Image (cartoon, rainbow, N blue to C red):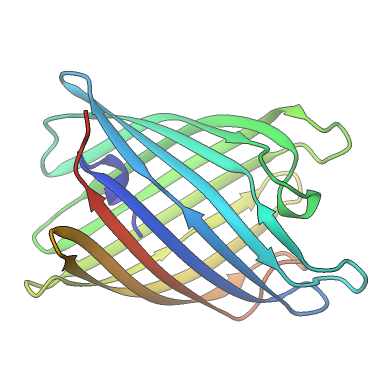
Length: 235
């Protein structure tokens, strides 16, 4: 999913399923279900786009003797303030907050973090192009865990045919300023907009490749399956 739904005046509920392989010395599988609801509020000439990200994670044993783990990762909230009348060039800016909701040390960083987030996109004809950039710094949390200074960069491009099929390419790169390490997956996906009764649903299947990752990170290919439900606004 591109960040387009993050600043549009619609309600969406994506269920993003990621399968990453080759994690750690034991070449573990890590499965992540990202719940990413988006709820916009109109504030006159400005929309406040509320975006929430909650990962549910199952990971196999990455290091011998560690064991597998299942639980919640860290919760992220993004608030984008976007001009309500934007047409050709759409943008949003606001804070990003990360909360240590991880149920195990292996599934999160045990730090409270915050920083700015910006998203910009353009829609020339059937194309959708843009980028989301975010940087967060830790300000509280477990003093025994490493402080956080992470940049997230997500450039994206998508082309939609009249048949409601979409092909997209994007990356969800992270740079850790403390370890000076990149995590760079390159993702491609096809998406089809369908209806389940009266409910519009966007179905996506994608494949990616880890061009760069830390020594303990994933390697090789990754897979993604996603269903995004477009819902009516309640208020």
